[in-house]
Image (cartoon, rainbow, N blue to C red; front, top):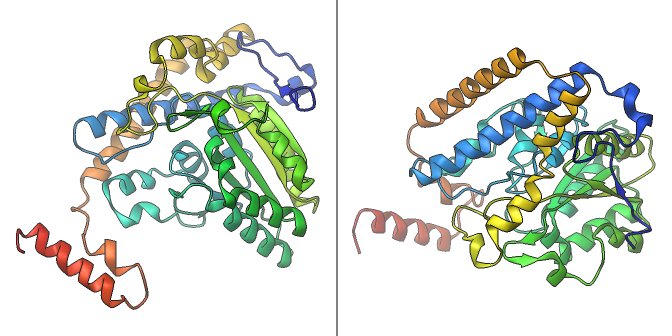
Length: 354
């Protein structure tokens, strides 16, 4: 199946263009935009992990290593498209939404789940694969309205073992919903490697079951991710139905800050191997090789990014403490007696009462 779905690559790990058919579509403005957002998202991710370690943020799921997959795909969207992210897709949500609002959700604030005004971004889905049928449904609704909007839905390799994955693909296939299924194969579902999850040689081959066109891209090559996602979105807009994209990438860090990856993989050895293929190192090599590198501009970008993220953290920490009532009051329009009792018991617990 790897022969049937060859890994699509435009820029190799050395920064060389391997598919010259795209060279006229890659210019200085595009490259610098890609590079800035990649740098920004890595800095954000590292900052968030540091905040968690300092007790200033709750449990946090990092995405370092997956920046090209998320940034490249998000930048391919139209402003009014739909995005259905998982709990690890902050880079996609921030890139598309142009807002760091999601950061507050990791401090228990409901406001963090609200998309920026005018943006169709669903709250991050934590239960695995539940967002796939929702994305297919939203896409179908757009089709019924004769809208030009399409949907993209993100999920990891572990999600393909869930029933919702198959239901979402089947629904989209039957009704030819304008949705892009964007899989980030980061090699691990928490501690379970992909080769223990499935006997399939690729993830994208699962698209064959549902007669959905599938492509397998180098998820660390932002050019390949961007252009292939754009093709898939264009197909959807033209009424040609869903597309399945498998972006092959790597999660450098832990599943979340509550996880210890050294328990299930040789962290140092594996990361050294994969950092040779790092998405940021790769585009830097490209920029230097093709005369897009400007040292003064790069330093300026880094200063801008630092201030931008520091501003986001200051905004987060200026908020009042999260309201514990939010956990219970928005579960149902009219809380059931069980919810009321749970709320009462928990508030009493916080007060030290029995």
